Image (tube, rainbow, N blue to C red):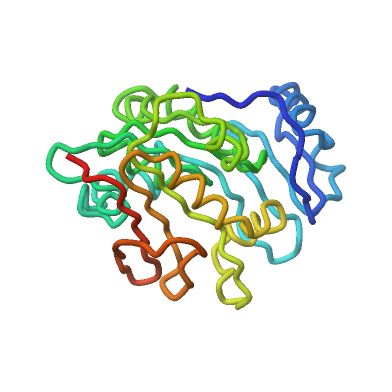
Length: 270
């Protein structure tokens, strides 16, 4: 289920951006998306922007036009890395699954309040959780909505997983503050960390998204609202050596090779 109402940018964007299409059959959809995002729609041969949202037969992608830029980013739940992770990723033993409290038959309802490209949400949904997602950056939300739509159309197991994922484009702090739906048992947070080391920008997603999304300097407010909403637990994903977010101390931590989870336990899941 995808709930992405018409919206314009509510955050500053430091890179120029446009929507384009690779064939005439995608032009109308590209122009509709451009209108919703309040950015230009241009034929590919006429684009002079730094970033391009591109509609093609394989869905929506985001790419940089600068020389030597990394490849395009798109959300693909059907094939590729996420398909491999779904089949061979370690099941409930994965760190994100342990962080939100999956064990035995326990499958809590989860709100992923910083959904991004939906990878963690997809893993949790594949393991049987109902996952609500919030993404506040309109371009990232559009990529995620496109990937969900294609997953639902694919049918089979992937469509069943995607049906357990619901996306809303909104500011997570405001959405949690004004929450009116079922209370999530667990809230998953993965705020954008303010990296200063250039080596931290190796991932192409980070290089493309940082000009759009910036850093989550309001992470303490995000954590505060999450702690006020979740019924059982808040799990915060952080770079392994990053400081704890300002606020209460976590009850527990899970350490991985490059990241960790700070866990704020409120009630026992069971």
